[in-house]
Amino acid sequence: MFFASRLKAGYTLVEVLVVVSIMGILSAMGVAGLQRAIANARIKDAAVNTAAFVERVANLSSQRNEVLCLKIDPGSPQTVIVVLDDEKKDCSSPKNGVVAEYSIESPAKYVQRSAGCPSIMTDWFGQNAQVAFKPRLGLAATPPEGGICIQYGGDDIYGAVRKDRTRNRVIPMWKAGNDGTQNSSWANWTEL
Image (cartoon, rainbow, N blue to C red):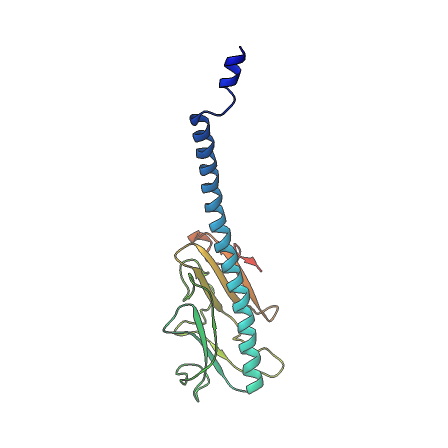
């Protein structure tokens, strides 16, 4: 009996392998959840910082008393640039020369209204959108409606910056998942 208890003093190789494999499975599940949490945090950060940049552009337009145009940099979908407007004051043919720019971290990118952004939103980057930041006495220079859509890589994680006409301010928003039936409104988005 003394000899038999001495043989059982350690762990067998099978027991160690079972414990290591269980730890591997649990850590793999944790890494997947952590990656999703990182993506959510980055897109929220991009939306909040882009909203602050839009407010800065509106203030800059008022300070300079000039019409400014916001567009995606042709060389990088992570960068928005601000340029001066031409004589028409509608951003139909902006002048060359960057006044200001802002970049977000890859893989997040600015997109023209995609499948994940509400179809009711006037896209500030679209061809026929009112993207001109015009100085107006007593009001913000941001366009009266519309916004910017941000997507995290190819995932269904979206951020948006939209002008709320009722509160007359720019609001950063966030959404994970893309249910095509819900893209007609802001109902499934969360304000940040």
